[in-house]
Length: 65
View 1: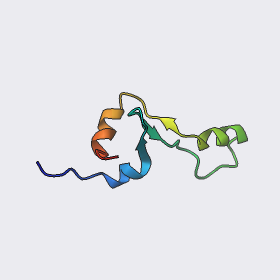
View 2: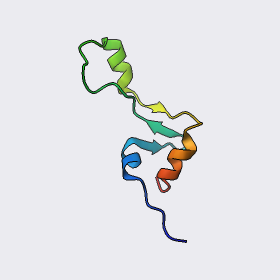
View 3: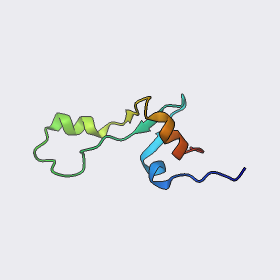
View 4: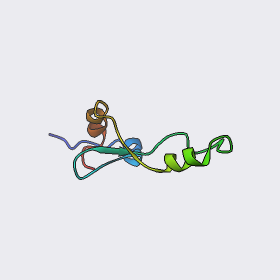
């Protein structure tokens, strides 16, 4: 069997936790920040766990992470 290639775009956006869950960053935190509240911007800084229904597809893209 040949080695699998890691999808580099996915590798930069997702990481796998010790329990095997996929961690992601939140969207909407890059520009037009003046119209967003401080509380909302602070919440967007924190990472989130990917939904379990999306996890198998992403894990296929990052097999060695």
